[in-house]
Amino acid sequence: MGKRSRKQRAPRPAAAAAAPKPPSRSEIRNAEARANLKPLAPGERPVAVTIGAVLTFIAASVNIVFYAAGEKIQGTRPALGGILFFTALMYAMAWGLWRARYWAVLGLEGLLGILLVIFSLFALRAETLADVVISIAILVPSGALFWFLIKAMARIQMPERPR
Image (cartoon, rainbow, N blue to C red):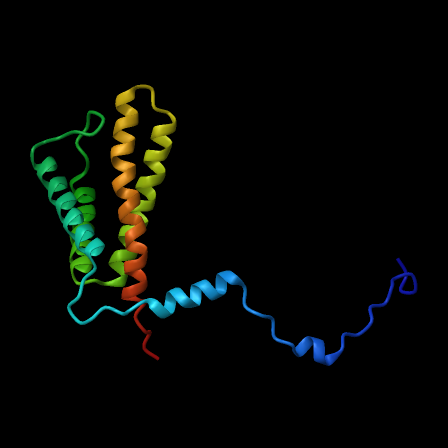
């Protein structure tokens, strides 16, 4: 199309462009929620983070015990390096959770998110009642812990980056 056939827009008045947009209802609710959050006191640890630390420590310990007992996955023993790496990572996360570190809570949230997706898909393909019960037995507590860790993460707050 030629330049003449396009309709020209009228310039906007300067006063209309400078008028601030009022905040939305969700922005107002978010601001209220942030105002009501209290940062953790020194040495304080939210209950959800404590539960996460204990469960992570138990999972890492069970991982080592099962490997030492000679357990096999799909008929073969897993590689020792992989088991040691994953277990060390879990112990580091348990330590970070115990100390209420943001990165550890974020890592546990990631693992719980993956767990929730896997067991949701498992529940969709469930063939027996036992499969459904197992899925629900994993999904409900994992989902609850995931939910409560979100507020704990907000209270821990991201550490300030050094400038």
